[in-house]
Image 1 (cartoon, rainbow, N blue to C red):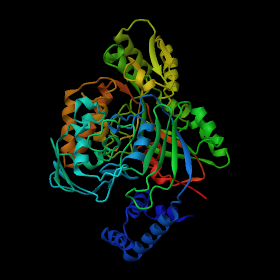
Image 2: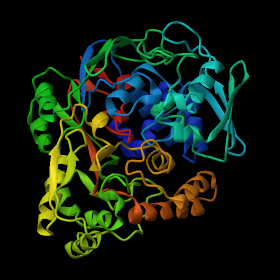
Image 3: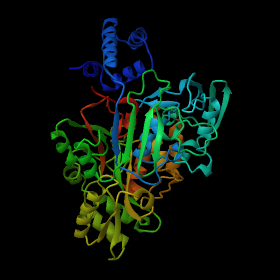
Image 4: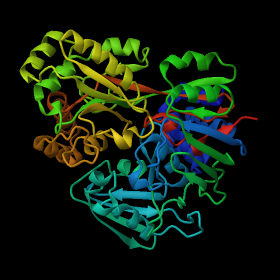
Length: 539
């Protein structure tokens, strides 16, 4: 057993990740021992843990080499503008070229990144001290003005930021010193460092309007960027993290067809691929020199029933569709067990605010038939749009189609290609599917996808009580009260929301065994889309 595995066995994978992250940020062995003892660990054990962590850290990382990586999405809308990024390909590029004030580790705990310190007294006013000696790819030093610009641009409607609903809580951002930025919120939010560790809040140069050069402070620089085709990243020799990154170059492409991704991986054309179908897992495992990497998190593919322009405006139709989900069958036949049964609530069981007390909605054809009859939609075929771009949506649509036939409902499954699906069909088709990547906190997920004015409010669902609870929970410091508020919000979505969530899906990636350094970060596959800074090629 190597030292990394021994370390995980003694203190668990989350604490192991945090110790290794601390070593990568430059913590000394003595400082680590002091932290462990301060946490209640005996001195002898603390010394042993520190030694193991040091050995594991020393074993990691070999400089040099080039890899080719394929994500599951590619479109002409691909962007290097953090405010507009919306899929795993964009997010993966974002972590190559940019940094945030914070970053999220394997336990989704915010760690210091471009901020070397942050503090608050009331969770309303936050002070961030910026790391010194950081430069952008073009040599410009990082300043408070860059941070102010990067945060405030999300609030400008002209930016059309995907994170505007998150940024709206920030009332003021200003430089309060040569190396200091202060943010003032509309109301208390203890999760602000978590929010700022997400992809959209990467820091860019003040005044940037053209993002195609990808000028950031990240571990790699842009060598080539062709939206919908590929990007090539080369090592940033002036990166502020000592010894990082390891690789010389990364080529990232998007391949929508899963079979094509797997074939390219097994033929040696690719070193790492995202979004492996469970049916391909054994094939990858059986191939010499290859392996799979599974991350359990809050990923889900959901049935989206738009309130406007289709049957989703009828509450009885929405309920009927939810009762038609045979979730256990879908888990067995579609994901081959690589999932957890969901309950039309978006907070997954790994999240501390998951409401486990919500009664499970059953597969009930009698109730589905009752609500369909009340909906009185007639006998015309109902188009339901699905695509490989939304993981398992085609399979889910076909299962629903077969079930609907038993009730006299004609669902006409329209299978769309992966290319262009998000731009042309998602949130535009009255009845279709979305795919939501894990989010770092309950507040982030609910704000981005369920708040009435959220740009990604998939079903166009609006609920004043939900919006009020969301804002109240964000600033509630009493954990029991906050937990109850999140439970109430999940009930509202479960009962009234225009989406159906049958399963929480595992992220499965395939890779060459020569590629080292992968560890789970439950923001999604490809190591929470931040693999680029962490992986290396074995000799």
